[in-house]
Image (cartoon, rainbow, N blue to C red; front, side, top):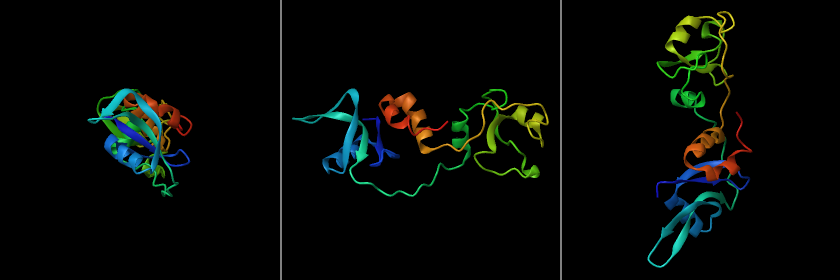
Length: 169
């Protein structure tokens, strides 16, 4: 039972990821409805067999205040796919302010990128345009759905139909 289960609010917005055990308890308590199951996986007891849930939806809407995705090194690297946004390298990665702090640049999702040490030193205290560098992709504020879609691509393709409409790249 190492697979995870995506939990959606009543409006189909992603709320959490839980274990299969937690999903089954919520199902038996009639707090959720199963929307999707993992193919060919079952949970067996002595006399019963249950389909393995992949996506569940809460039966009542829960008002969960939006906290956003935490801005930290790990999430920034994950957003940028562990690649330098200037040259594409995946070695010696650091964090770079696109507009340097000394020039008024803020420390936020839209101004931070992953850069290799070499590109960061070449860029220095200038903007990419001033040194003739080009970003491979523009920085953006990721959503929870963005990170869940990344997980789903590798581990839970059954989640994709529920995340595609909400994922903003």
